[in-house]
Length: 305
Image: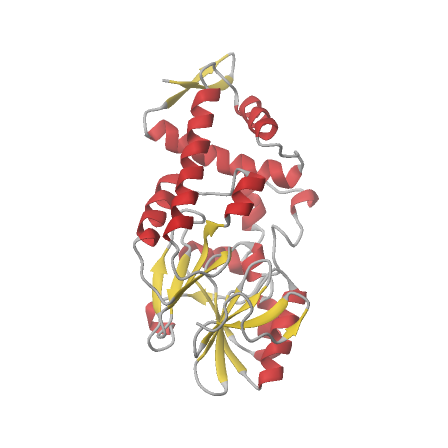
């Protein structure tokens, strides 16, 4: 690994190219963009950043190195990972691949805010942070991966999220981990399936690699401590929700208490993101036999068992 904290830096602002091994790199950005050399002139990307501007900066790096982009392999369909797809595809003609349900969301990005909101999303949810531009994606399968690549299922944060192991043993972990700083600052991260997420983290804890590259945490040779920290945070949130439900609470009442306890500020986006995650926690706790839902005066109430 070549100076992972600094690496071989090319580009400007925070969009710097960091070399991890001989052929594996990442572009430092709010959601890291993986870059893998397939030959002296051909590369692929793992995700594409948050928007057209991220795609443009990635292309500047490609052009500066004389590299041709053959494909983008999306780990999942959240807007900060597919936002550069359309620009890069229009500029380079590259293929775009996304796994399972994520492919439908990548082709039809309005599905993301609609899913989060649970209905037709208003303008407050139709922006680049929740709804990328559509791109012409195809289903990701092992058959379309470059030689020597391994696709790693990482469900939980999103429906069918995956990571990738490159031939030089770099593992790109997508969003299955958040940094300690992010967890400590924001408290409740987005999850779709809590049980699947915990199982994913237990799997990740046991992985070996030359380097792990999470999208929202520093690259590391040993990812196990951070994986455990993420597990502990999920357990803490689950315990807190269960405790709050010692007295029957409707969903909005529970959400209000959680926002206050974690010092979060309510707006349309946070209501959708955190609200969706809390519903997933409620499902997990109910399935685990820790809380129940009942209906009273035409209101759903959650209470500890």
